[in-house]
Length: 112
Image (cartoon, rainbow, N blue to C red):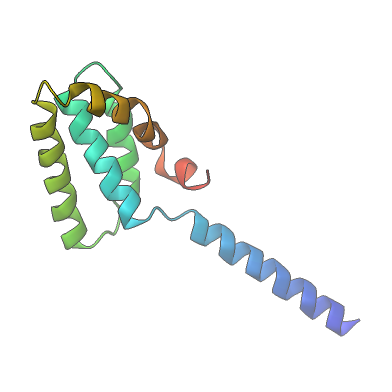
C-alpha cells in the first residue's frame, strides 16, 4: 500500500514538473517572435502588431540581457528586410504563416 502511494506521489510530481517546463517560452521562440514583430512593423496591416507585443511582454520576463539585445537586433533586421520590394511576398508569407504562432499570450502559446 505504501509503495502504491509513493508511486502515485512520484507520478503526480513528474507530471507537474512537465507542465511547468512546457509553460516556459524558449529563448529561440522569443527571438523568432521578435523577428515577427519587426516584420509586422515593416509590413503594416498584415497582422496585429499589438498581439505580438503582448506575446513578447509576457515571454520576455526574466530573460538574460544578451537575449534582449539579440531580440532588438532581430526586430531591426526584419524591418530592414521588409523595406525591400523583392522580399515583401516572402516576408508576408512568413508573417501570415509561422508568425501566427506568436499572436497571443505567451503562456497559452507555450502550451500548444
